[in-house]
Amino acid sequence: NQLAMCVGHTNHNAPRRQAVHKRLGASSSAFLQAVPDKILRHKIDLHPDLCAFSFGRVLIEDSVQFKTHRANHESYPGLGNSSGSTAGCKVDVSFDLLAMEPMMEKQVCARTQDRVLGPMLLTVVKANDLVIRDMGYFSLADFKQIEAGNAFWLSRLPSAVQANRARGQSLEDSLKKSRKRIVDLKVRLGAAQHQARLIAVRVEDDVCAKRRRQRRAKSKKQGHTPRKKSLLRDQWSIYVTNLRMEQMPARAVVQLYKVRWAVEIQFRAWKQSPKVQAALNRITNKHHLEALMLGAMIFQVLTLRMVQHFKRT
Image (cartoon, rainbow, N blue to C red):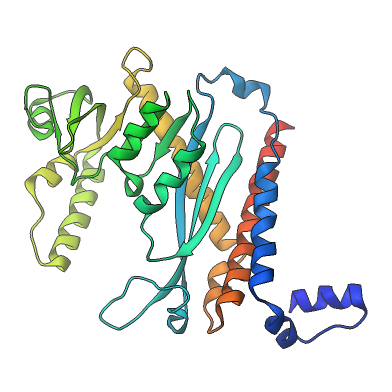
């Protein structure tokens, strides 16, 4: 409706919304994709206060999903369930936290997993960058590639990933014996025995109890009992990184990871502000859905630009 009204102001002949809808196609999607790409290529100088950071950039990647009407599942397939086909969109976003500079945005179907999207960011990682990742993007192969480029990475440790000490002692044995609030260890991760630094922070009792309730409920729904290893890890918030102990103390690493919450807040605000979910919950064609999603992406990129501008002023 709004697009039809805007066209009417410029052409002095307002088209119907149905007419605008029919004009959406591959060309409109290409144009809308070019707009955020153009914005992303426009760089802004860092605020002088940010130059004190020892990293060149702090790169954060995350994704957000939107449900759409199941009738759109051929264009945007979602994860299926017992009720039949589902449909949804996912937007993957990467940006430099220090400069609040968007780096990359990609729109895909909801079925695409985060770990499949993760390698795209590696194409822009430079020496001395720090990549902070959520557990959904955890990939030892990606971390190895980051290290090869003389860059750094920081991530939470998924419960399914094994961690052992140099002499073969398991992480769980080390945590079980420790009485410290913060444990800082050198470990080997996964079957590849990738060397890394592990920092575990003991959580409050109520946080641990909540995590265990959620884990038991999820396990019951899936028809099995939770593993003792996972229940033990619920007592801790566990981080892994290639930042050396002499390079940054454990408490500073933990505080550094907490900046990821800025992403969660931004995504929550973005998902609510343009009312994307309400717009997508309709039966329509692929090009219309693309136009709505790309319009929302432009909104988000411009919002990040505004935040960056006000931080500078």
